[in-house]
Length: 411
Ligand code: FDA
Image (cartoon, rainbow, N blue to C red; front, top):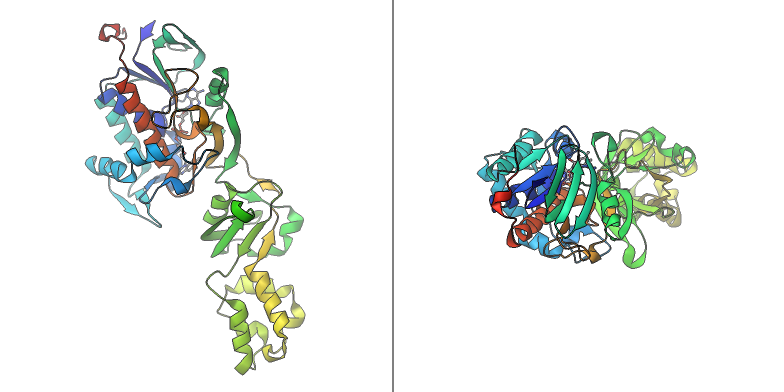
């Protein structure tokens, strides 16, 4: 039986980061992953360049059934802390859009950095290694693994969410949480393209490939959420950052509201144009909107499109503007975990300590990263949660009593 101060299951963003810090703080750490390669999600993230944080990340950029939970960890390990680490490792990066930071070369730079941090902390890494059983008793945690049995007073679960099963995502963390009496907030795919019935989407199929900035909203009243982002029309439905953002808030049965010209007051523009123009309505609008969008939009009102704008009634102009500014569309569903960037929901944070990520039911058991019910917007926020929750946990591991050094693992 090999003994460690802490065993971390999952060598993704949160697990690698937690292991490196805890190791450097003097903990004897074993990091286990069932995949042959570490950090596959970091590797494919941000189109291979990893949007590794967001300069402006704060609690308002996260969803959770317990919205204040993430505050403490995010405040104690900030985007600036992670940026300083990336700079110390001399990894070149750039800001793309709205505070989103990407590696200049490749996400491999980031993975290499996390592995170097683990080496400095003398972290032992076992992979591919299956965890077959986890027991908790007077001696702490005992794990049966394909690399042999291990024992540690503390166990960290960093096995991530359910998205992209083909690169190693499993529900291990959720099952382990249940085994130890934790509740789950129902997991669901988030940051995911939405689908539409072919019937509902038929009038817009001709727009495939078109991208434009829109205001997109879901929900009503206090639960209404909106984003100003780019939308992409595809053959099957809608995608792009606007849809990915809103998908995390959308619930089945809810319509989406889209303003396809958020920077324009179209009704005011049309009424003003009416005063001095002899042009047809369709011609008056050219240049104001992308041509394909305009054609599709006017195809629904052929009798108005060719009429001189001066002859079109104000109420018809207003109606036309409304159809562009308040387009409602009912998604049929999402493209599921196969395409989702993250999993919303997960281990209920009301049963975890916000300072250390420790279970309120089982002392010494911790959950970090995406397995927890804290989900970031699109734009580097999910990695920032992985770093911040990992750092909070690592400090707590180091602050608690260590296993005796003579219990070092045998070769
Ligand atoms: P992560 O998924 O990173 O790691 C979990 C680890 O646990 C994996 O190594 C896995 O193999 C292992 N594991 C799972 N089950 C196991 C088991 N039973 N036994 C042992 N090991 C097990 N976020 C962001 O901020 N910026 C971005 O640019 C992107 N881009 C992006 C693109 C794509 C395509 C996806 C799918 C996701 C993103 N994300 C993102 C989200 C981001 O990748 C994600 O939130 C973090 O990787 C979560 O970190 P974790 O460490 O919690 O899980």
